[in-house]
Length: 87
Image 1 (tube, rainbow, N blue to C red):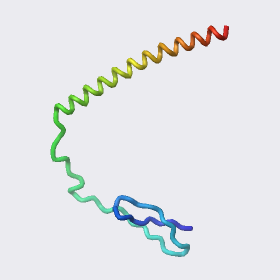
Image 2: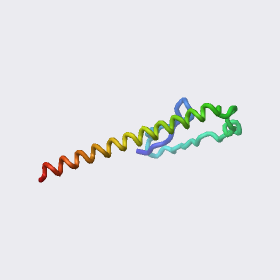
Image 3: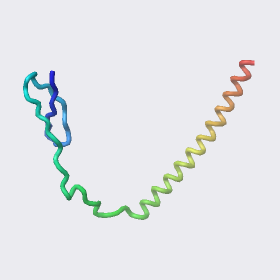
Image 4: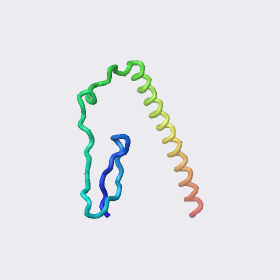
């Protein structure tokens, strides 16, 4: 059984559909990009938004460091308990 690309209603969605053996398989390529597709956004991000993102990143890193320290402590406790049980 041969498979060919068939377009759905939306041009960006493509599915594989069986075609009869011996039938010519048609492959359709995506449309070419237009200059409008390559243009920059009309407005750049706000500086306050960038600061908020950086503050959120700093908060996330601090939280990860805290969780890492807690996990390291717990792993040490578990290892010491395992050593006590084995001896």
